[in-house]
Image (cartoon, rainbow, N blue to C red; front, side):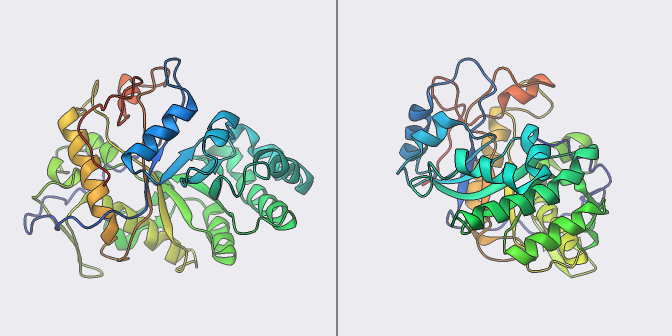
Length: 335
């Protein structure tokens, strides 16, 4: 997940005003299934946990045969990541992409409802030059295989957006994102964006209020350039991505929030109470969309399970809604 360096993004998030909106019905909530751990239950039990909780969407971070097999006829829709280690290979030739599709998509689809393929997750540096060629090659391979209904995108860090406050000033930082946006516009695929108010709040707790970051009643922020008022940081961040797409010449491209979450332990503001408030608030909120784009906003919570081998700060191990024994990390409801 990304480290959203957005200290300046909401430095004026001190306005006090209306309370958060009344929760709406749940639409298109998925949960990311990470497996960087040595103590997780088998994939078939994880899929059953999704089904028992009424979770209808999943994201996996590589073509995991165990997870794909367990998903057969489950009714769960899927974001399938190619894995960043595969990106250069897929970008190199259409034949490489065709081989990947034949191995990792054709044996499972449509029994596994693969909705999107993510050509890279938070790709950085020189590897970003492989994103558009990989997406094009995957699109061609899927079309040739009669699987063109599966949309190809890439998943970006929020800090790919520059000048993100006010939200209407959102613009992509790097030129390659214009090519990404226009390719998505031509194929009808959404942009996948990882959006973490947690990291924005952690970076600038003096200017971003906890309630504003966690869907609790309290502060609001007005974008004076478009007249829209924001009751939560999540909406403002998503609408900054929307504004960036517009400036890239792709105003019709949808945003799918491919990761969002809050840790429950072992870090700044990482408590079970804050994690429950954020994730329950997210579930209840996204059915109504954002001030700029009303309607259901497809969103995936990170993550289903706590992962004890996650690298980085200790807090990274505590984004799960559930513990490895499948007990809840804190109370949460999906239906």
